Length: 150
Image 1 (cartoon, rainbow, N blue to C red):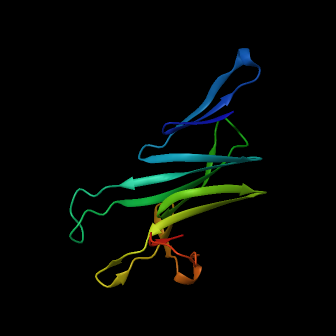
Image 2 (cartoon, rainbow, N blue to C red):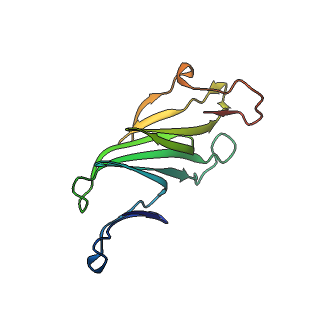
Image 3 (cartoon, rainbow, N blue to C red):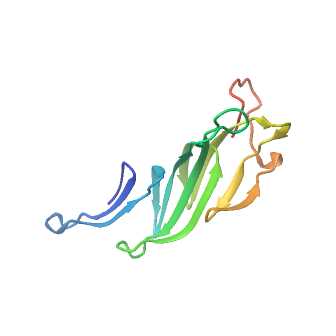
């Protein structure tokens, strides 16, 4: 049994009921897990990270919002192994698992800082990997007053 509660993920041995026990209590400290997907021996945890700067940046306080994706090998349920630790700038919006793939939507405000367009960024293991090119960003070609990259 996999339970996401507060800032923790519990892996529980639930059968037989008289021998049930919590195998793992994984906490996420400054991360806010929102959803999980289990497929075979893989567990995916998705959520958000909010960083509010303690100083004024660009003349205003800019909250840094990121979406995290962590993929675990859960073949040994009592000792999950972190396989991938991914992060994208922007707010988690929604996700689905179709077959063996997890698809998720992340939204980031469209804005400029000193005449530079700020594009979404991709990180792995807390290291910058790349800025996402405009050609890789999907946009809705209808009426939209929210000015968000999706």
